[in-house]
Length: 332
Image 1 (cartoon, rainbow, N blue to C red):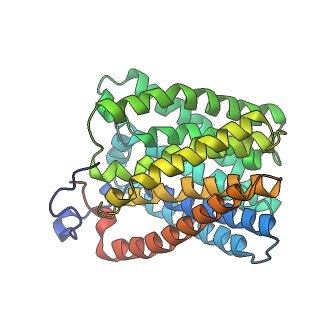
Image 2: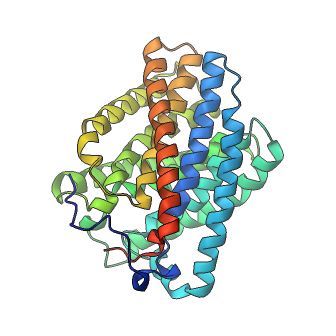
């Protein structure tokens, strides 16, 4: 587990604050809120509730997206060299994908309430996802600075984004486009998995700021299962059942590390917990609605509760961080 440096959670001094340090990974906040909106919709469907929590969360996610886009747009305008350096950074480049993924997650969250809003989010999100996937993977291949130690679970974000696309894409795009995204996401998730596991097993512990990204291992099988069903598959298919089994294992593995992860100081990367847990809850509750055993309902409900608590807690802590200027501090 990560070694936490002394003073890692201290508030930055005024001299350390700059818009140039605003992380592109802040769009993971939108992914978390949008993901939990989808999970609550699945809970309503699975248990026959009519809470409409998902609608409120979807609009909250849209507001968060607008705020994040304005803030990061200001960084790009005022500090373009810092933004370009971030986009090509061996460690940080993967987080660029949080922008298009957040748009497509919100597109799926809005689908039950507004097909128009969903479409307006999905099409630019999907186009940007295509571009970002190509550019990020080019960086991994062509940049001589990239070494095994730079690999971390957030490298899955550009891949998972492709798997997210069909969730709302089936309502907006031709089938071949949705299958394109699913194919890229599935093939490169399987291909990238041994690379990430090799780094985790053989290259030492994760830096404390990246420790929350361990939760991202939950997301690919959960999103892939949901996308498979959206594309015409069934929760009773062997593929979907196998993927759900991997989700349950990854949840158990993450839970086994909870005691150590709780000691990690707050950083924006902590939002990496939220979307994977929400995606797991969505998949398991949807499977239960389709006829899976009560075990899926229990695990999905626990994941939903934990993800909701994390969104609330991290939302409050992020507001505190904004007030203190912590998001504008250079990483130590």
